[in-house]
Length: 337
Image (cartoon, rainbow, N blue to C red; front, side):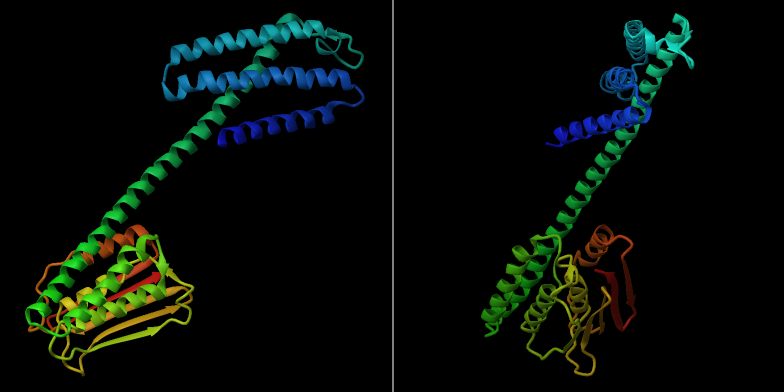
């Protein structure tokens, strides 16, 4: 389909150019102008495409310069011979010039002029071929890079699921081992979270509202782990979360790191999560005082994964800050959605 469209485009361009040349040069001599424009134009177009399809690949792609010169010389010779034969056929208005057509081109003069014209179309063909070839190569490289980036993003995203599942199953195992009544509720929350991770997050982007709901479920699941009451302050200031989209499973790494550095059983020092969107710019912030007694000792892949996903998915559209001290940990993300 694309080939047919390209061929039709070429035909229309050449026809339009010849039509313009015809009307510009006719001046009452329609027959003579038609012969010169359409007959000789068709011959020059044939030279153009002979060079384009047969000669240029040898020259540009294969670097076979000997065969290139041979083919060009043959094409130039054939085109000049045909043009001179046509000139003899229509000698009265092709080989003659001047106000009264009283002057005649010598064979050498006409052959040189015909050769220059054919050579011009050959060079034009080569120039067009090189430009298109460079464009195609750049597009091909871009597609390969995109495929590579998409593959890497898919790999990074796939790492999130087992990492999160590993932590969650550890939590549920602890509840089950303690014979806690929270275990069934934890399993139900995990099933809701896994449904989002496995089905709703398959797209490149998801609704910001769905991602925020995922964070709510994650927090509720974490709360079920502990006998003590834990404190998390989640503030959301997004008026149109249904209209914004974001890369799925992007914000969870911040939340995981907040819990990893110790949950808060102090109402005065909760884990603070803030989500705000202003003019299409997301501001996400997570901070918590470190609690070494309740610190999660599991090693995660979250933060490194997160930074790489941001580089691939939002190049030059994000800023991330991590601040860590002996007693406090915070992470902050600015992102243009």
